[in-house]
Image 1 (spheres, rainbow, N blue to C red):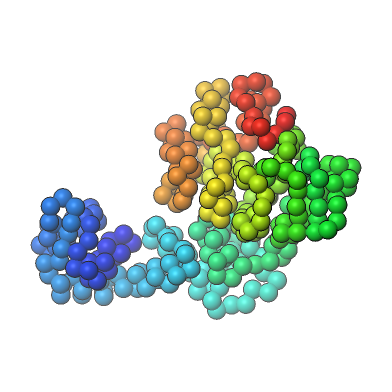
Image 2: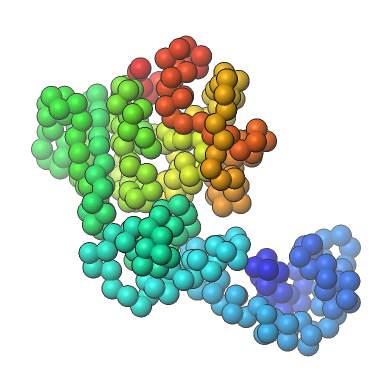
Length: 320
């Protein structure tokens, strides 16, 4: 329905648009005329305008409001959820509110926002919450000199094995490393060792938007996201990659294929991969491949285990 409404709006504005199967009912009823293979024009303007006013206007207006915030829903479900969240953010103060509390207030489920890249992006774009209010800490490991503002914390990190802070403190951290690697899970974060790299344990959906904002405007070298190959893991990576387009995802598609060929008992994802919700071409390609294999999933821990067995090779930014 969303695609149809957007096409009708374009038709009413320009009197023509590109052909889409969403317009077939109107073409078959002679309300629209198909010109050639790729163009559609209006034949009955009054009927189309009335249809738009009765069935599409509210949808179109919601979409326009969200698009002004760089939010572009691709389904009616995403549109309604995003607009519901927008309406709440517009009309309510959020002092002391963390992401899970906000999600519970709006949707009755504390994880709804975290599980949706478009909802998480909407919060960040419309009314960013302080990362400190999430009560979620990120961990950092680095094999090079590292500073917190003007304080050298290299020896502290070496003695403790890692350093912890709120995600919004990344702006005052600097490391003499060529790579920054974001880890979704804690076990691989500690099992692998940085090689000319700074490792950051992101703790899932809560902090990834804030981490993306912090990394976007500073020089953190090559950005790599090491995540689970499952629907949620790809969505987490997609949020980061929307902030920093040059971010790469590990495991890459060749590594994933090697892993699949060496897993004796596949583990299936809890929900299906939704390729249309991913903005990254690389992540969509991975989602399509995992769908072809029957919606299986591969955790970071499995990638590390296969690397320790010599089945796959780890990148240069880490040592096992």
